[in-house]
View 1 (spheres, rainbow, N blue to C red):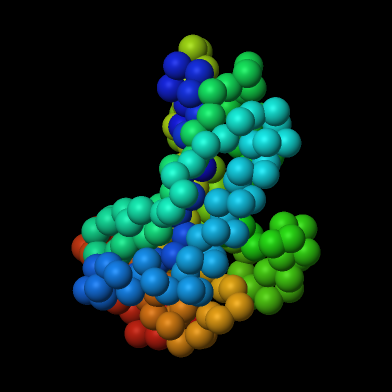
View 2: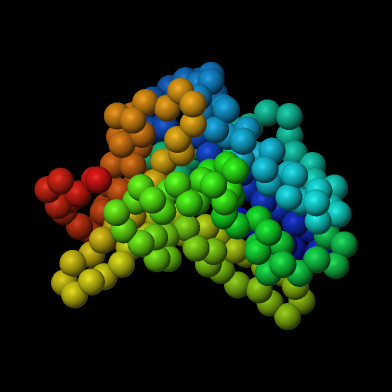
Length: 192
């Protein structure tokens, strides 16, 4: 979500995901993924500008690798003018990457469709120190232990041009990463 070091803010726009097994150029050329990514970049930039900041970012996204996943990544930076990290987190969260656009309507739509409570899914998690430095991440892959059952949660961005089967494959890949990190064997029919 955000990092602050010595009065410098950094927000990492991460949206648009593919497997490391797919060619990197395919993700960079994907109109659907580029559109999804640009929506997130534009929303973060607009919020920061509304807070009186002057955000800067590279013209084109980069690729960021995280385990078996590859994401489109745009770092957005701005010097702070006395804004507290929690105040910025409050106006930035949730970004379109986890809530959609327009935010209120998208969140109401998601609540009407999802057969479960999101709980801590996509919640900001991190730290802020007494000097105002901070690191707040979005917990977009999470788990809840209910008795002896562990429920893992991951998501995918839906935009015009999304193919539901490919989005489900993306969610399955993200859940597989969690299962591997936790040394779990996959449950039958776990994605849904």
